[in-house]
Image (tube, rainbow, N blue to C red):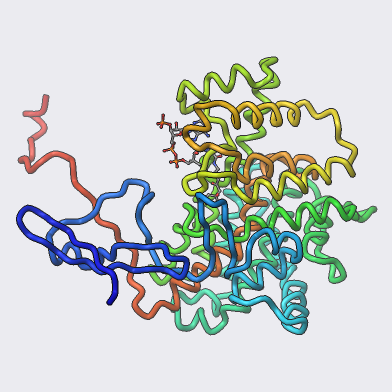
Length: 433
Ligand code: SDX
């Protein structure tokens, strides 16, 4: 007997189906609620609302659990890398050796961008934000592959794997070109002999005269950073991708919308906001104590960036992993006297003891350390959220596919509760006050 929920409204009772997931998560299925009762549900911010059934990622926020396709993030961080994890997220299974070689070859083949796209960068102001450029370039990419961006899901799905590899590879090149253009540097073309992260760092930092060869700890830290960001259930940007995909839109335009959502400081922009926060604390000669008091006063402009999470009410498992990698990279890079790092450590220790944060279960999230690690790797601050987008690309792509293949898929069209003016008559200009 499937579980059900009983809803009493006025003097009537309604039985609603209950959905139980493979991890025993339970949901009241309200798809028939309005037809049965005339009522809708209200859940501002969707904190209590499931928008879909998904097989990609599982999070238990209370236990601090994160799994991609059933594999614990700790095991993937220890044994895998970003390219293999990207394959897992977009295809559902870890690749065999042959599959992994083929995927790597597809990423190598797809690394260059069409030479005409290089001219797009000339049109952006030198100080344009890289996230605005990335969103534009990803949508434009579809114009160079119209057969992969037909806006007919059946057709676009025929080439899903090819399109996924193309976007995962080219997003890296587009990011590097964005950085180079912002500094007036010539583009550095991808090499066929370098792995994913090393190739990205090469395109970012090599010069015409001297190739940039990342030390193993730096490329390992970047690999781990991207792996830890590969997917994260129905976060703001992934839900945006699904929203856009639900209209039948192609993969390029859907991930372009994901980039726009990720940009916000409460979401992917937090890694940049953490560094801005640390810099402002340092500039005011504060050791973090004053800032924490201001954050506790609940001032929206004094939030402890990199702390808190809608789902994790325990330590973000990614933050634990990235912190360890960060400390290894720092030791290798011999970075010991970074004042921002000292402030960050003090903020973390203070917040973990302070009742304001403990009572609200505000722990460091992945963004608290990712900004510091990007800074240590020499990635410029305004590129931090672009790095998050590169990491999240496999998750967005897999969620686009789940939306596109759903035979019962419907366009996302939430309802609302109207609270505006009730009906009134038009007022001619001469009678308006
Ligand atoms: C990411 O969803 C995902 O999965 C996202 C992500 C992913 O991988 O996709 O994990 C990536 O976006 C991580 C989050 C990065 N953002 C930040 O670090 C920005 C700072 N954090 C907050 O703005 C906030 O914690 C959110 C946005 C992350 C979560 O906000 P919620 O769940 O809507 O919580 P809330 O705003 O309702 O706050 C609850 C209470 C409030 O106080 P009271 O009204 O109860 O008095 O906690 C307070 C808030 O004022 N609070 C904070 C705080 N976060 C919440 N107070 C100080 N500093 C903070 N960071």
